[in-house]
Image 1 (cartoon, rainbow, N blue to C red):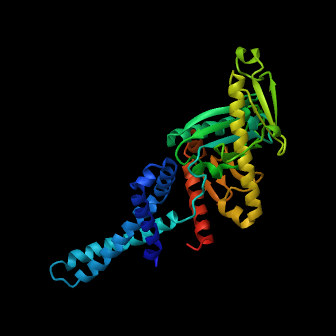
Image 2 (tube, rainbow, N blue to C red):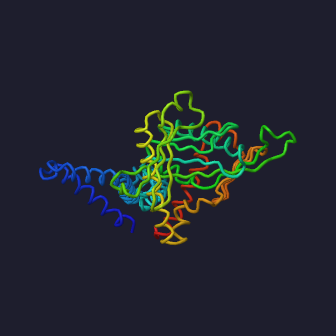
Image 3 (cartoon, one colour):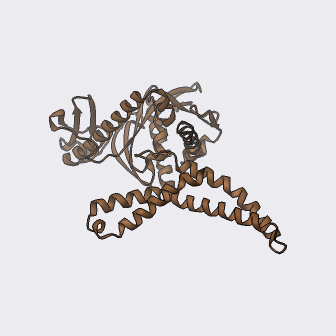
Length: 355
């Protein structure tokens, strides 16, 4: 029975409440912080559990009152509303009981790279970047460009962004993969539609504790910045390239004038990439079923197509097609695709966990 499944959450919440006001905990900041985080994480399910228990109790009370000559009609009306609300609360509870991804609340590094299609792919990196910027604004997130490599014909060969804000990873983790664009390039005189592709990687920002890097595993090169960065960019050897020898991962940063700042930013991106690599390896070990559940699997997989002549955007993982490409890109309305992806993900996780 659902009521019995929910009671342990309520009991634990009340236990934490008592612990947080006890002298032994108030004097131990580390334990107090840990308990406060646990309390915050179970608070939504506790609130919903209390609402559910109250609803069940109200249903029972109103059923008794049905025979009452004075209150019977009122009880009948209230019972109708309560019985309609009960399954809604049950569904909300099921979603809250889905095992939480530990990275969901983290900030993210979003990496966009031009793939097949040359200049047109680089221009699409720029277009998708603008779309994500608007999406970030809609969510009240902050965006910082960590590194960029501009293309000669406009756009970017590569772009690394740090996106800070509530649930940035939980919403954007499904964006990882190959994004294919079909449109007539500005340089195409015959009006033919070209197909190009870019890859997107989504990596959670990690604490130093989560990724331990030995200085002996790093090769750090300092070089002169290149690209369109104004005259001051080329006056100092400020660009930094860090190679993580065991994994072969290479991170370059040249956006800052200070060598120290470029190195600091490159190290942060490197840690995120190494953490992401660990997650990918773990996922591979856990097998294809797990990969299907989390929905963020093989990066080489084509996840979405943006067809400009048809104003069509299609997500191939859930067979979703919308003829609103222009609005979604211009106004950052990615929730129209992301929300169905999250719903699909939650359904698969509930099935896998027998909820």
